[in-house]
Image 1 (cartoon, rainbow, N blue to C red):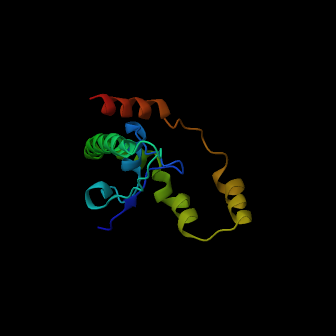
Image 2 (image 1 turned 135 degrees about the vertical axis):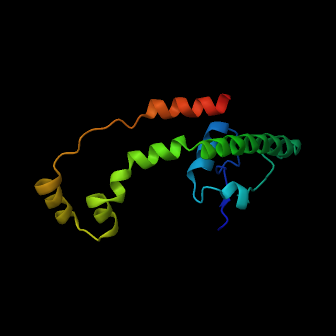
Image 3 (image 1 turned 120 degrees about the vertical axis):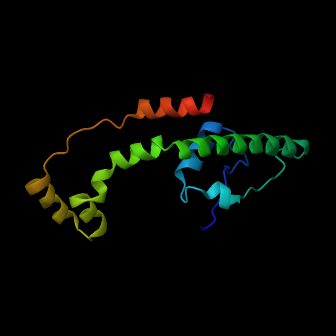
Length: 142
């Protein structure tokens, strides 16, 4: 399995200490098991030239958030509810015209003709954002 090196930081040398964001990244970034076969790359600099102890406290906080996010991500992946939802939601991408559009080179006029002559207007479906956010919240607080 390939390894992935992930760097969660901004140009201000702040490390992400939002467990929710880190969890979503760990669940979303392929390969799905990167946290157990890859790692993190971080560039620790003194946020303030006066107080070098900030590096220690920043990295300690970041490390705790990464650990918590990793544990939550493992539970989410093991449970499979998010994966099942995504597979069902995007199942049309894996067959029929959805697969053809993805794997066959098309130009915009061809796609327009396909929509106008065969597919028609899409039927709106809920993305169930609230359901997914509530599901994530349950994992975060269990």
